[in-house]
Image (cartoon, rainbow, N blue to C red; front, top):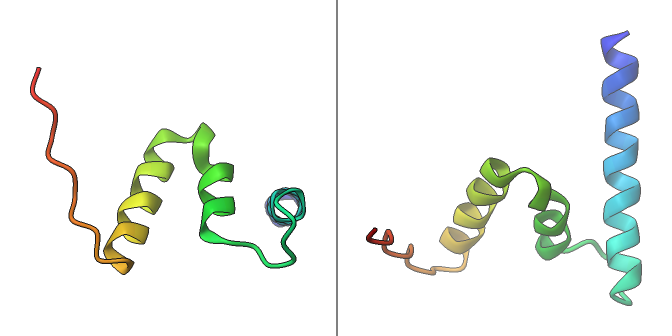
Length: 66
C-alpha cells in the first residue's frame, strides 16, 4: 500500500516537472522547475535553494533584523 502511494506520488512529481519544462519551451527539466514544484513546501524550498546557491557559489543572505 505504501509502495503504491509512493509510486503514484513519484509519477505525479515527474509529470509536473515535465509540464513545467514543456511550458518553458524546454525538453530538459531544470533546477528552476524543481524549485517551482517545491514552492508549496516552504521548508523544502529553502533547503533546495540553499543547496542550489552553494553549487553556484552564491553567498547566503544575511538574516533579516526585526
